[in-house]
Image (cartoon, rainbow, N blue to C red; front, side, top):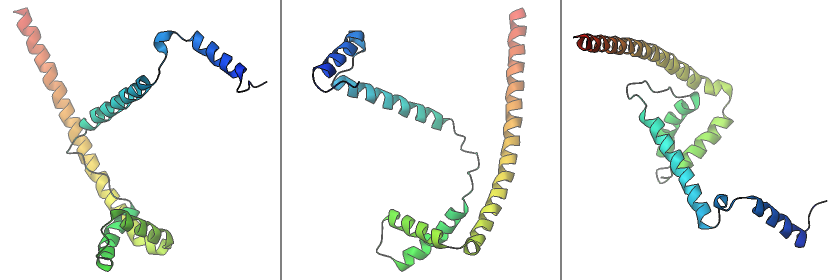
Length: 154
């Protein structure tokens, strides 16, 4: 049987609060402060992960839709020079992309696959370069360890 909103609900609530230790209770402003702490931790985590990015790593290629949008933006701006909102251009482009047939989308898909193949080649070269630099770093660290051990022996 569910408790009603009367005395029974109040007593249930009191029982639950009585079970909790006083230091774990979060009331009023403290609750907002704990939420702020959590968001600060998330922000710090995001910043830490973004600082580990390599600026030399090739950027991922654009999809067929974004290849289409590159061309669509220029034509849309020529037809509607007074529209400055980026969201309006995006919405119009999305609507046009949805209304296009697969045959109309085909040239954009071909361009996207070409860009993807270029990206894969660049990534293969990048990965080789990374592996070789890692090997050199390991060799340097091993040689420095050997030097330290030989100095310790003296």
